[in-house]
Image (cartoon, rainbow, N blue to C red; front, top):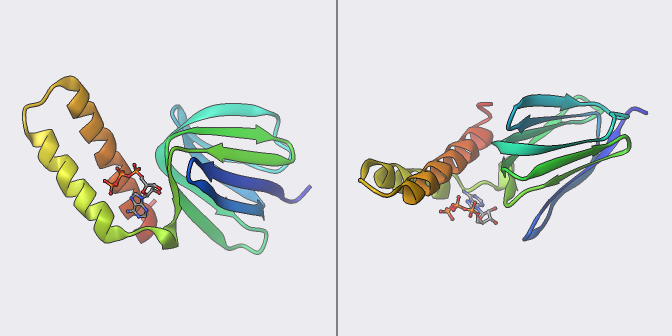
Length: 135
Ligand code: ATP
């Protein structure tokens, strides 16, 4: 088995569906690399990149904002609140979101607002990194 079917799905619809040779994802407990035929596994994802290595040596990168990865020997599914292929990321929008989040973090706020701003900042930084290829 040289490839595994990967799909990445969000509440807005499917973002990615292809055969790949390897998937690298950032789980909350660290980065994992998954090859075809992997034993079943479910893990929560961090805000981060999912790298999809193709059989021809090329790769695609998707920014995901958490969710779960479900690994089965012949199929890998990523279910995420939001996910964008690197080429579809609007960097200007992410930079605006980053600036808004930084501004909110500097103000004195309650814990919930602080946590929300922190997560928004992480999503924005992740989108910028994925778009720029700084992983
Ligand atoms: P913003 O404040 O710019 O909306 P956000 O982090 O709050 O950013 P999300 O709630 O994670 O946004 O996503 C809402 C929707 O907008 C999702 O469909 C997501 O894919 C899309 N999205 C958010 N930011 C970007 C971006 N910079 N480029 C492309 N799509 C984006």
